[in-house]
Length: 116
Image 1: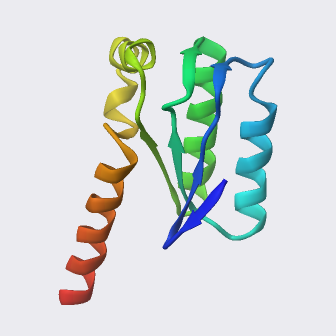
Image 2: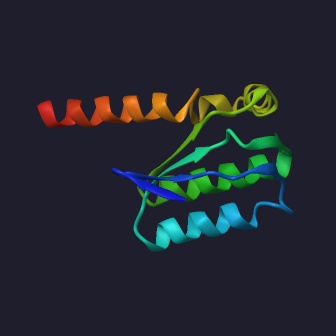
C-alpha cells in the first residue's frame, strides 16, 4: 500500500476470491482506521477475479461511500474488465486504464476545485 496525495493505492496480486482477499480487506481496514477515505485499487497484478472477489470490491465501495469516500479501480486485465462489463459494475466503479490516467484525472479535479 502506498500513500499519494489524497488517496492510498492498494495493489492486490494473483487471484481475487473470498479465500485470497484477506490482505486486501486488511489494507482497506487499515486505510479506514487511518482516516483515508479515497482508495485506488490497482488491479494490474490480478490475474483472475471471481464473483466473491467482485462482491468484496462492492462491499469496500459501499463502506467507503458510507464513510464519505470513494473507491477507484485501475489497470484491470481482460478477465476483470469483462466481469465488470457483464455485471454492469463498470457503471458503479470508476475504472481507469492505468494508475497514471487516474493520477492525471485526480490532479485535474483538484486543480479545478482550487480555481473555483
